[in-house]
Structure formats: structure tokens, C-alpha cells
Image 1: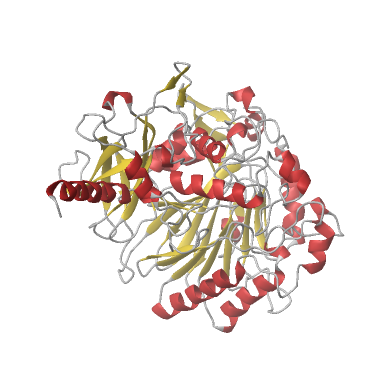
Image 2: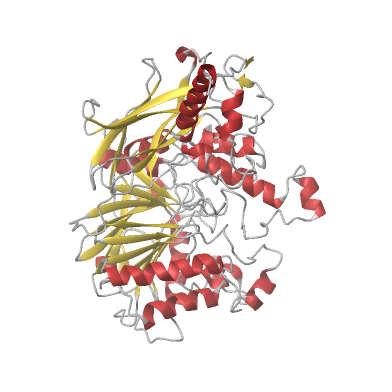
Length: 626
């Protein structure tokens, strides 16, 4: 090989190494060219000999970490010449210039990649560096950077920071934490659980409160991280300065990038990503409302929907959404030969096996699309229907049985939609009393799951759910097959904790009064034997705190989300003892702050709120007008 050929080969090899360090060039799947980016073409097009001026680049959306393992964690940032997102859609022939909305001019896009260095340290000063590296990013992946920090120790807190190569341009300092080894004895673990953050409905205060309290180790997000709607279709954000961009229903890759980027300007969301490692999964609105394998409620590959949506097919829209999600979320690609797989699991010492499902996008049979409710009701118990497809379902059951065999104390299942049977004829009517977009629409799939748990005596199961914009706490019961005593909880095989939304409105109306909400909650609680507590009124989140003896679930409600604040109300606290497989009685100690609890009472106390201008005592009636 000639000298100049060898030099060229070494240059290309070094460049490829720096590109491949950035996982986003391989996400969501390097084996599916329609979804991924050809690194060879990117390297060929870009010339590192003409680098960016570091002063022209900005860390536009902070930093994030996620999908922690005992020896590694995913780190994320975005370093770009503009806060706007890229419209190039990874064209090989060249870039579409970026438009800078601040200066109202187009930016001439360099052919050079952006070079970024990262460091991981045990201290805030980044003096004790345990891992470091260099990665490139380009407009092809919206200038995002996602790397895997390695050589880390189990269950250890770390700090990390990105910087533009050979400059003082640094990102904010991030904090993260690895998980324990699977066979480690762990005394306690805290997790905050979220779902359904709708930008025009309010500020994401719920994300920031555990940061201010420093109360958890990890964050689980069960989906609806964004919503695809246009402003006005679902929330009028201009009244509080929260118009989601682009201001239309989103379809293109640029649309999804821009929408996620807009959400990531919320300061409390930025803070949560910066301080805690996230384990997220999508629901439906990361793509579209009520998605399933072959479409969604508004996009079903019909000629009319194709024309209405600007010539974007079901598959193309889903590809755009998935690619933007993987670019922007601190998440691993689980299996590189599966272009939509997000379902995955984590072992957190001997204490927890966390199983994150995809009950929306992967291979779900047709769901309730609003016009076909009677049909879905009629087939809801069809044995051929699946929420997750045969491959994921088989994997799910293997995860449960292997967790039992290895002796993990708790099995935690992250499912976007409510698992327990919920009679909601108050809302849906007696003809269709259930939500057929949830597990109630896939009864055979649920029965197969319950059969596995009961027949194999798999205990200590904690199911998590979001989606409904309300709080539901239930014993996990196989109604009609296994006897169950609602007073004592005997006959249950676990517990389900379903949480309210970060901001998305109450399903019975955004402006519902506390009194009416609690009346509805009472009806729902009385109509469902296994449902032990229900609250409709409050937006919020819950924290789970695990020990080998018990799990405690602490639910928090937000007095208002139309302004940014740190207010929250402890709504109810629940305990599950190891081996009991039911909620401890009396439920929530017999007293809750809101909603309706079985065998207990709702006591609305005057609350102390620090407004920043002194401490105020307010009643729940006062909160309704905040």
C-alpha cells in the first residue's frame, strides 16, 4: 500500500471510530437503511479539515443519561449551530441550510462534523476521570450526541460533561447512577414514575420536584413524552406561553424533532434529565393517537388520510417518529436487527427485575379507533389478539419466569396502559363499559399473563401504568378465575400502581371541580372490587421506594400547572409487604387527601405552600382557582 493511501485509510478509520462512538448513527437500527444513517456516506461527505468555530456552537438542550447498567450508562447531549432542528433528513447530496430564528437568517452549514469530547468522573470537578472519549455529530442526526460511558462501577453515582473539541465550550454538568450487579444485595432503591406530559396544558413541575428533593435514584417514563397534536386540537398553549412547535399536527422527521426539542426547553424536564438516569418507553402519542401495528386513530392507510396528512404513509410517519425518538432520548437500541424494538429489561441487584413493555407500537392488534368500538368490544376476548405480538409476549413470559428462578425480590412491569379490569360505564356507557384501548380490549393476552403468574406461583408483582391521566391503585386479580376478597386482598397476585399525568387533563374534563372529580372517583371505586383508590383531580407523579421487606408508593398531586412552581401535595401512601401480593390494609392507612379509598375516608386538609414570597395556608377550594 502506498504511503498516501495508507494515510487516507488511517484517516477514514479514525473518522469512522469517532462517528461510530455516537450511537445515534446506528439508531434505531443499522440493519435498516431507511431508518438509519450510512456512516460511510457521512464520512465521505464531511471534511474535518474545516472545523466549526466552537463559539458558533451551543449545547441547546442540556444533557441527559439513561438505560443504566452496572458497568455503563447512556449519555446524551445536542451541540448545534442553531436551536432549530435539521430539515435535511440525512440527504447525501448536501444539507438544507439551517434557519436561525433569532437572527432571521440562514446559516451556511459547514461540511465538517462537530467534534465533541466527553468525560465521566466520580466528582463534580471532573478530576477523577473514569471514562472519556471523542465523538462526531452532524445534521444527519440533528446534531445529537449519544454515547455509552463504560468501565463504571455498580450502583455508583457519577458526573459527566461534554465539550467541543479543543475548546472551553462545555455543556452543563450532568449526574447519573449505574445499577447494581444482578446478584448484589441492595438495601433500598427509589424510582420516580411519570407519564403523559402535554406541553400546552401546563408546566412540567412534576419532573422538577424529585430533583429539588433529591428523593430517587432513577426515573421511569411510561410514555406520552410528547403529543403530536396541533395547538388548539388538544390544549390552548398560547394562554400560558406554551405553544408546541411546529404549530400543527406533526408528520415529518423535522416535525418530530422540533416537537421533542420544544418539550425539552421546559426547565424542570431539563433538570430531571440532568440529575437522574431515565428508563423511558413510548406510549401512543410519540407517534399518533391510539396507534397499533397497522395504523392509528387518524392514519389508517386510506386514500383520504394519506391526502389529508400531506402524503405521509403510516409506515413513513412511524419511521419519522421512531427515528427522532431514538435521536433525542438517552436510550439503548436493544437489538440491532429489530427496527422498532424498545421493550427491554433491567436487573437492579437482587431487589428488582424491571421489565419495560411496548403495548402500543410493536405488534399490537387493532385497537379502539373511536369509530369501531362495538367491533373491538366484540373481539376483545379473541385468543388471536395480542397487545405486544407473539415475539414480545414470549419474551415477557420468559422474563417473569427467569426472574422468579434467579430469586429477585420484586418483579416490576412497566406497561403503558392499565392492566386491571376497570368498569368505566359511567364514561363509556353500559354497552361498552371498558376501555378497549387498554388491556381490557385484549382479555386473552391478560388472561395468559395472569395464568402464568398464578399457575407458576410468581409473586411480588408490581405493575405500573400511565396513559389514563388519572391515578388508580388496585390489587392484581384474575376475576372470574380466582377467588378474591376485596376487604382483605386475599386471592391477589400483586399490585398495580397507575399514575396521573404530568400535565395532560383529567379524562372527565380539564376544568372539573374537585367535588365532582371525587364524586366520579367514588363511583369508580365502588364499581370495581379490586380498585382500592382512585383520583381524577390532580396532575402529578408517584415515587416507588423498594426494600427487601416492602414497597411504598407515594403519590403527589400538583396544585396548579399553569405556572412554574415547586408545589406538591402528598395525596396518598401505599405499602406492599413482600410475599403478601396485595395492598396492606387499611388501604393508604385509611386516609387519603383526594379521590376515593376503599374502606377509608378522604380528608381535605389545609395545606402549607411556600410560594417564594412567604408561606401560605390554603384550602382545596383555593387551589381550584390558582
